[in-house]
Image (cartoon, rainbow, N blue to C red; front, side, top):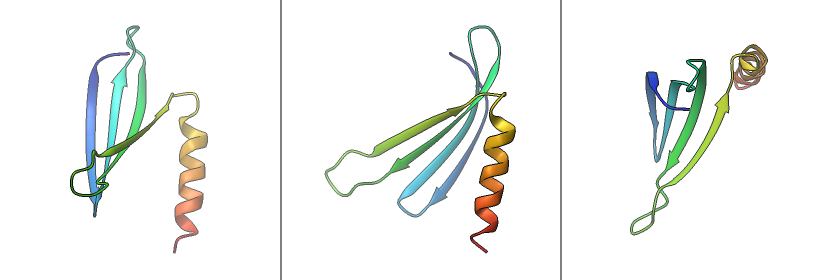
Length: 72
């Protein structure tokens, strides 16, 4: 899994979210969502990452939209 094809960044207080579309060695796209959190002075940032592949993207999107609607 190698190349970036597109990227977006969302800054939210002490957290930064990265949305990156990458490609596998075979040229197939997938989505990587990463969160970087500032843990305090003198400490390393903490980073978490999930990968979403095309066959799971519609279900992931539906679940995300449903949960965002519950925030209103």
